[in-house]
Length: 176
Image (cartoon, rainbow, N blue to C red):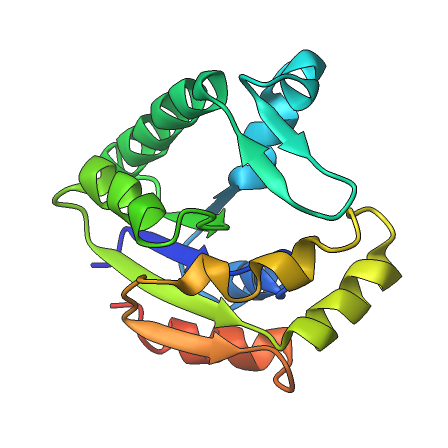
């Protein structure tokens, strides 16, 4: 049985909406955890230091060594929850492409994982970013392709024209 679903895509690609829909259509309860959860759990000082995570005015994201240390522990914690019986949907942005996926693969090890790429045209994601009003303008465009570089998926969905529920149903059909 699938124990973890990892959704990877750029900012404003539609991952969060898909996850809410997945939680509604999947028969068992699934926890939703994501990189935003990790960032929100960190002290505010980590969001303005070289060692933490920095969001530049143009949407670029810089990751430091202190962030990586906490991220590694967090990833191991998510894997431990899945090993303990929780089904988990991970909302991620693989800023390092294949390297980011490898960190997750190492931690998830023997767990049954469904790797899902969530794509969205950069212009559409940028429009969503502006409409949301809570994102740094430029993140969607800068992450739309880089998050997928070198990443291997079991399944890909594209939210450019598809609604979150349609994507969720497609993903749910692949959950065993």
